[in-house]
Image (tube, rainbow over all chains, first blue to last red; front, top):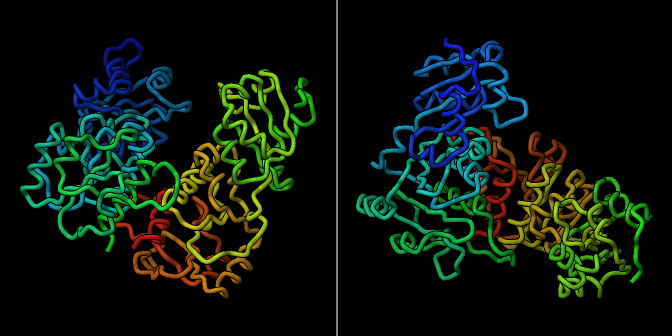
Length: 259
Length: 259
């Protein structure tokens, strides 16, 4: 295993750039993962381009590192000092991967089932929480549209790795994607706090469904709203301004599988 | 309005102690609130023992301050320096209240309706998120048992003030409380991730219901679990370890009012 000792090494700099920049992630189709558990989860679901380990991590997390070592195209040993530089946390475990977006992300041939779609959801903790709920409840996948930086390191951490285990589908052209899905029999639902829409509990969800959650402040874009079969809402009897995006998503995800 | 200028003033020290110590809150039956909006929400629902304002806050937040001034038993003007010391935030607004727990907190005569009960929920962001959901969905109240520090300043902020507007009922003796509620016709439900329990969607929730959410790590205590009519669960098809406590609570709250 090659040893990288200079902080200025191009491979270290490239990894940190992928960690810090959402545009670097989107342009390269690569994302950065830190920690033994998250890296081994990633290795089981996504191609690993480069893996970095400290010598102590290779011993301490031997089981997890083995999974990563088997899958990684390139492996490097790094010093504790470089691990400190690559890490987002105070006490780095010394395990890092740069992974390729999973294949499904570049592919929009959708199997029938229940999907939550996120449009411009901005807050990494919401992205993480929704991934976690989608995995726990067990829907068929999560469709992320431009503006949803699901591989943001904070979102990955908040998801507790769910985003690395879920079926994630990326979608660059929402209108075409929804149009194709509708032709294939999907019911497409736009969620909104507006009371001028159908209560989610009145929708027949027996078939294939895509339910969309929009931006925290502005909701779903008008174009996407208009492209959907129905506008749905979670009726609210209280006087709070609205439900948090991840709470609303949790109730919608639950309604999709509720029997 | 009396002007307090010494940081060592006993009233300032007492307010900070209430802010920082959950045992001080529980022993005194007082809680600390910061910010013009939260303080005026508190003043509308809870007796205000003491209010503190900077001179600039009295002008800048005149409308909110008026609501507080009308209700407060004692009002004090403080310097910006003291406001900095009392504040939990970087840019204090200069408005602080020490309030008395609302009357209902010391009272367990429960009106019929739907209630979420929290037992030993520890994380302030979960406490805040659950308050917010309970208010938005519009159930009849939230019952908090020992170990739920609902008036923790972080929980209040995370609730966006919901905890100050909700009907909050405190409960020191859970078993007696549940026993009384059952005698009065309440259905009592203990939520658990255990698959050896009834799916929440199969429960008839037409009457009065108390649904309990337990500690993040350990769930509901055995004594409380045994005292409930039924154990209920949110069926999970996925392979994540479990739903976050606030997500589980959101789905349970939704099920209570779902038609």
